[in-house]
Length: 159
Image 1 (spheres, rainbow, N blue to C red):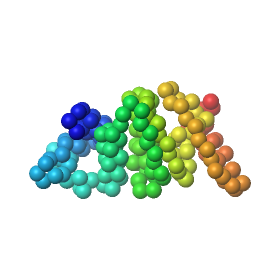
Image 2: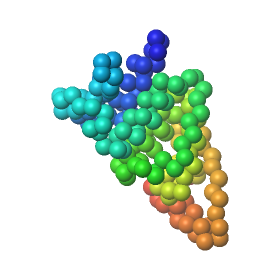
Image 3: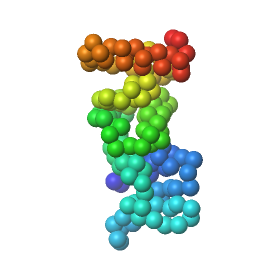
Image 4: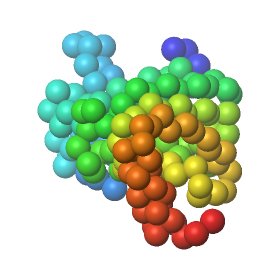
């Protein structure tokens, strides 16, 4: 990548994945070909990160290096392999990217997770964020959907 995508992708990883930590992605070395990760002033390989960190680094690095003015990001069940703290970071960072940094970014998430549905509650209006969604539910799940809606209203206020 001879344009600025490489630098933008590394900056995006550091701001979205490692913000508030002692870890940064410094770059990629050619010999040997590997990511240069610095944690507590020590150089580490990418495989020294937790599985959640690695998942988020891969997602954000690809997003940063391939994103254009109008990008559609499809994520199927992001909760499947992420620890709760990484799920929360993913939700908040995706919303922040779409709201503040990349207005042409469209994020489509397929999930079974009540936490994700609460985080992206369509009933809650948020600045610079247009949301929509569909719940596919059986009658037993209707009560669960009401609980999710009530929880979102409790957290975000009644809108």
